[in-house]
Length: 364
Image 1 (cartoon, rainbow, N blue to C red):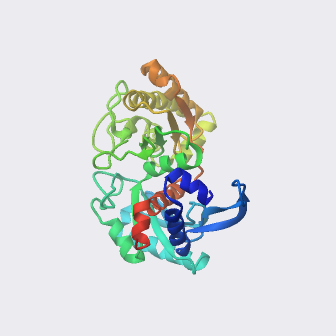
Image 2 (cartoon, rainbow, N blue to C red):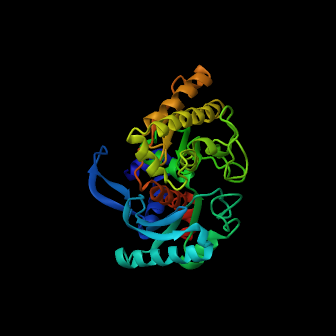
Image 3 (cartoon, rainbow, N blue to C red):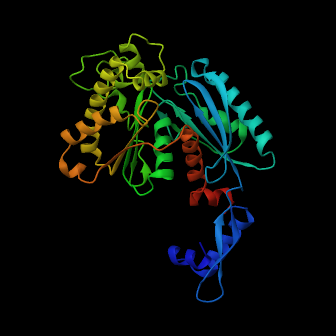
């Protein structure tokens, strides 16, 4: 955008805009490109974000393994590495591995570029304001551990932590769904969760448990015991681990379940149809409650799974009021396997470039 364009959309005076731009340019956060545009007089220079001004470190911690990535300020992935670890090893051991991997990656790829901030994806409910996991989750032994403080002490930069499905919906919206102000992302993998965009922002709820759709009760599917300790949860019917259980092969990963389905295994196909209808029942309730513009299905089992989607679509249109589904978009996620790294990076970038935080960052 040009300086004149900034004056028009902000309503600020020319001297104020010039002063702010000078501060941002001196900090290296913006640059003037060689491109010029007509402005009624002398062609005006175009101002751009300098995406190379800072590095972002992104962590995608899963039950088994952690991916560590470096991005620029547009969340473009520069390099990544996989750390062989497991959350069951406990927070201190796992975080030590994550920190070492990130430091090695920075030293290898961009030793002269300062780190601006860190984004972290956790497979658990997160108390966002405190930067720690809370409540029951697969991260046994992590409940209440100060993950944010641990990483801030190691790197000396701001750290932002959220649960994995919130970061998936954030990445989906930034990259493929920016036209939607109200978006529901449902992740179907080993477990099931959902992330909500309401009025263009992530809705985390009061304590970070908004979107915990996997542990809502679905009727008509018996009362299978869920790994959370309750019975009849959606996850205990349609989650990857539940499908593996019903196949009497509990060691199967979601990817292996999907391979069986694509080979036409009759048992898997029947279970997947059942899972789609169960998921559809829960999503239909969410449609009536939240009235999203779009629903996106992703995750290792949800991604490009037309059989699962058919069940969801059937129940959503059968159970929800026509007004809620009149213009509803229901589609598969377009994220790649790097989606969580992108989401973690976008989280950090959005926070770091928030006007108030930039003022503090630059000492204004």
